[in-house]
Image (cartoon, rainbow, N blue to C red):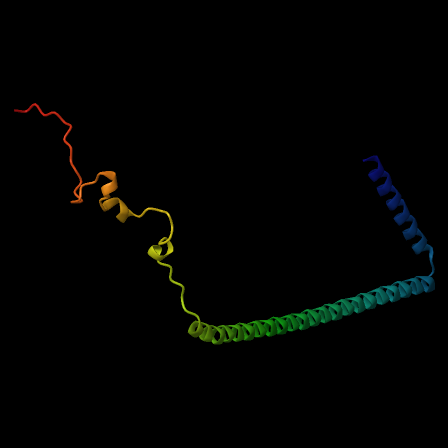
Length: 154
């Protein structure tokens, strides 16, 4: 806070000194000082307006560049999309023309389980149901039923 107080006092003393020096000037020098101040203010205002126009032109140029780049990107995307669609159509057309002769020339392979295991040593279910006289099976092919239960219900 002490620094702020010292800066305020310095500014006040400086301002008072400048005002006192201005009051001591004769009228001719006062008019020249006012004219120089007005000229500097006008020059600063002109420079600020010029910079505002420069900024506006730069912004307009930037908008134009962005617009051109967006149009270029849209064209590139549309070209790529149409090329992809053309390739997809030609691929589909190639697939249909390639598949049709292949289907006519090629027969399906059908594997039957009976044919596949005909010459193998794996016993079939039919072998279990047919009677084998070497094993003591009856020639009738009936399955004997034994009743091992003891019913005392008489």
